[in-house]
Image (cartoon, rainbow, N blue to C red; front, side, top):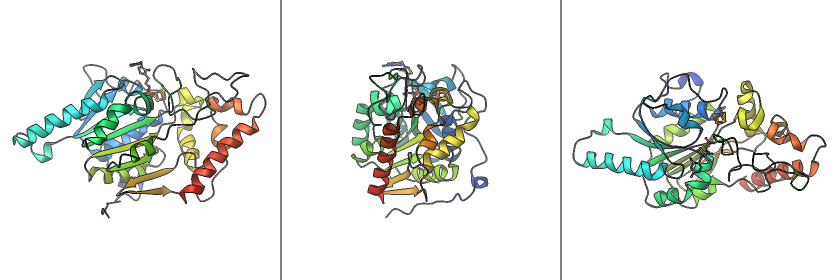
Length: 310
Ligand SMILES: Cc1ncc(C[n+]2csc(CCOP(=O)(O)OP(=O)(O)O)c2C)c(N)n1
Ligand code: SF4
């Protein structure tokens, strides 16, 4: 069993320094931005970010970046091959004695769910197979956000996206279940996988503290409430993120040492409709007529997940 530090107990324990400068071109209330902010607090300054095209590429406007570490912009499918190149270059320098251990970089991919669950999945699988030493941070806004919110493999059943309009023939909007990226990675037995939420900073920070002590492929899936695409007021990001966990729709868990452990188990799960009804992308489930069968299906899927997890 790997001994793992869990040293944060309260928010004031978190690292006071920021790894990302304030002010950005991202939308107000972007949940993913809060997620990466917390991640970088824990990882420190020596982080190389390999960033797939998507919303977060707006963070860096050439020749400036808000990051303390280094940043590389890649195509949607290529952040992992790019990370491999950077890791290899650092390793060569290390082997030549030209880079001290304390000056080495943590190589981190930052990518949306479109890159992570769809376009970049094949090279990612190859890199996990090669046991590439890297962290993968997927900010999961459950669609192709940067281009106007089209369906991705991560879009949940029953959600409206630009490419899954709600019609008489398609009353649910998105008709396929969300791809389970956690399980896809797990099938290759990587060093670490975690789901995190910007609403749970202690849980998130302890998971990054843990991942830092490990080597090899390490995935973070960060639920990223997206006011623009999900359709809610930016001030409600944390409410939405909390409801995702409290309804059981977004389980907080980790995979390490061959075991999956839930790090927060909602004592009494709130009905999923409390989460759904706050967001315009699910409005058609309630108006003009309530679609009980669809809401019930979403509830049953969540109940089934927890029945099999306990
Ligand atoms: C091969 C390819 N197809 C389409 C695009 C256009 N494009 C740029 S960003 C983006 C959306 C990316 O979605 P996701 O990875 O989920 O990240 P998000 O935009 O949600 O941050 C798309 C489709 C592209 N850059 N490359
Ligand atoms: S569209 Fe959504 S994910 Fe993209 S920057 Fe705006 S709030 Fe964040």
